[in-house]
Length: 122
Image 1 (cartoon, rainbow, N blue to C red):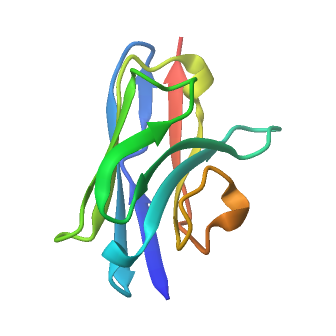
Image 2 (cartoon, rainbow, N blue to C red; image 1 turned 90 degrees about the vertical axis):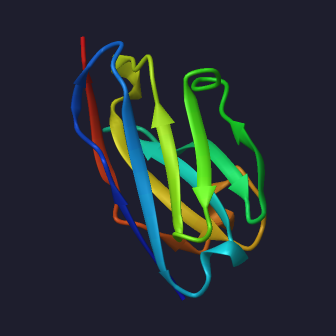
Image 3 (cartoon, rainbow, N blue to C red; image 1 turned 180 degrees about the horizontal axis):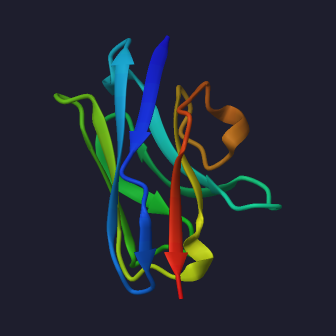
C-alpha cells in the first residue's frame, strides 16, 4: 500500500501562487503514476494533472495548462503541484492519487490522500 498526505493548501488572492505537496510512504512511490485531482463544492471530482512513474512530461487539464506545473522527486517520495495565476474557479479540495495505470480518470487510481483545501479569493 501507499499512503499519501497532501499539504500546502491555503487561502490566497486571485493571481497568487501556491505549491502543493504530496508525500508518499509505504511502497516505493516510484512504482506509481501520480495524479492530482480537485473537487469543488457541489461538483464532481475533476482531473488536474498527472505524471508517469518515471517522471517525464506531465499532462494537464486544459483549465490549468500554462498555470500549473507538476513534478515529482522519487528520491524524496514527494510529488508537487506548483500553481500560479490562481483564479477563484480553482477553489477546491485538491487530492493526489497513485495508480498503476497512467490515466486522467479518477477511477483508475488505487490510493488517495485526504485532500488539502485551496481557496482563491477574488
